[in-house]
Length: 125
Image 1 (spheres, rainbow, N blue to C red):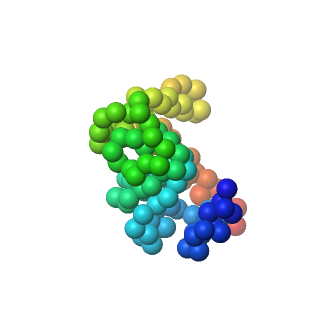
Image 2: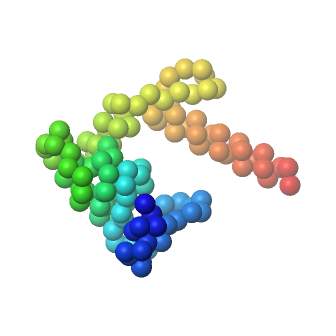
């Protein structure tokens, strides 16, 4: 599928490296996605997003949609979509506590685990 689009558009450049998406958002005005979560990140960064699939954030008036989503028949704010996806519909688990936790507690777990991994990496040098 990608090759078909690249034949048609000479300015299509897939990103195949591990990079923070926000570093890329500074370089573009609009983000094109099929169903990627990067489209939602682009919306949160204030970028225009064109969806060629039907990800959870399309059809709410936030994106330009190629695929119709008739069941999504009202406007939603980005905050509402975030809440439904990351708070209302998600379950977070802290393996250190072996229990479910709130999003904020899970973010703390990730921050602490990353800090410990970086410390470990630095001491092994």
